[in-house]
Length: 253
Image (cartoon, rainbow, N blue to C red; front, side, top):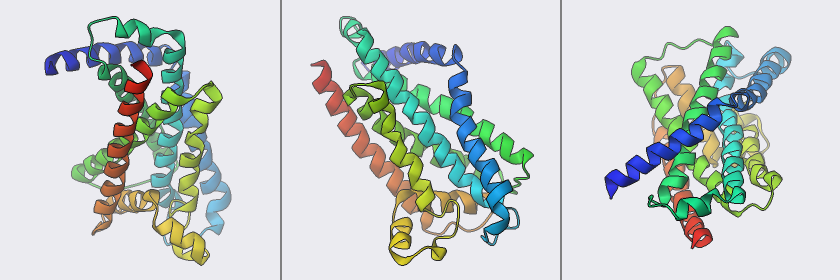
């Protein structure tokens, strides 16, 4: 049964990945807005923002990476909604395949496409002057955090894709997620914010994730913040996965 699940998931992931490779503009579109924001904040606002970092792009990049993921997962919900409305799910139900492999194919495709978009953003940041002395272990830790965060948000996107009635509704759920980094330590230190805003910023998932990635890039001790970041990501992942699977079984029953 396990081998059947992995085989079906691999086969269906290949199908969804072919859709991505035939429309690479999707990946480019996901990366364009974060890159535009990075250019805007570094070259227009960066001179007026005091973060304690010599190069503002070094401070800014972790938050831009999370915005990239937030924008990328909206396409996951759109692809899922398209499959639901096209009747392909009904065809899959008539075939001897593991039911959950259909959703996992979309999730794995989301992870791969988001990693490509993230790589494009990092490449542009390097051209803008981003530098990090982080070693291989730190880069692997950063990649791991980003993958777990992508998985967590992608399963939220699955819920939206399964329950939305229109493409606009499927994509709109990502807007609050994209907005969260703006009320965090992604662009400015939280101590510069008014008390109520600072309280929210310090106690939402993006701040701990951004601070952890920033410290890893800067070769600084991460202390307990990495566990807070992982707890947020894993907590969202577990809850979103359970709700997505329950919604899926209810829809296809």
